[in-house]
Length: 178
Image: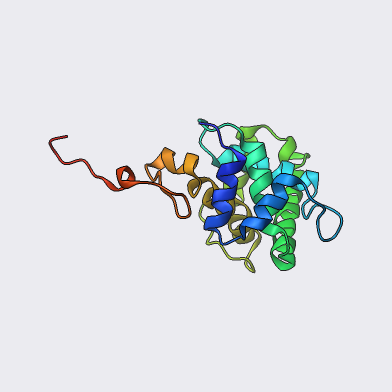
C-alpha cells in the first residue's frame, strides 16, 4: 500500500493541524523562519525510524513522513525543539553504540537499537527519560500519523479515520452468517 501526501494531510487534520499548514507543506512555501523547521538529517532519521516501526507492506514512506512531520512542527517551536532533541538523542545513542548515525544503520540494527534503549516498553513522556522522549516524539508520533491516514487505516480495518470522509460501508459489520 502506498502512502501519499494526501494521507499525510488527513493525518495532520486528525492531529488538529490546520489545513492551511498542510497546503504550505505541499506548496513548499517559505517557512516563517526562512528555513524548513526540520533539517534534512532530521527527516532522514524520522524516515529511518518509520522504516523500523511501519509494516513492510507500505511504500511512499519518505514523502509521507516528510509532509506529516514538517506540517506537525511548523509554528510549534517547543514541539519542534522536543522532536529535534529526541532525534539528536537517538543519533547520539546510535553513534555511541554502533559508530554511525541512526539513519545510516541497517534496519535490523536500528530495530535492535530501539529495543536496547527500551523504547518499545517506555511510557511516552515529552519531559521523561531518553527512551520516553524518543517514544513520545518519534515512535508514537509516526505510528499515529500512519494509522490515522486512510492508507494506514486500511491496514488495521479502520478505513474511515477521523477527518476522512467515509460512507455507510465503513460502519457496516458482517454478521456470523456472512
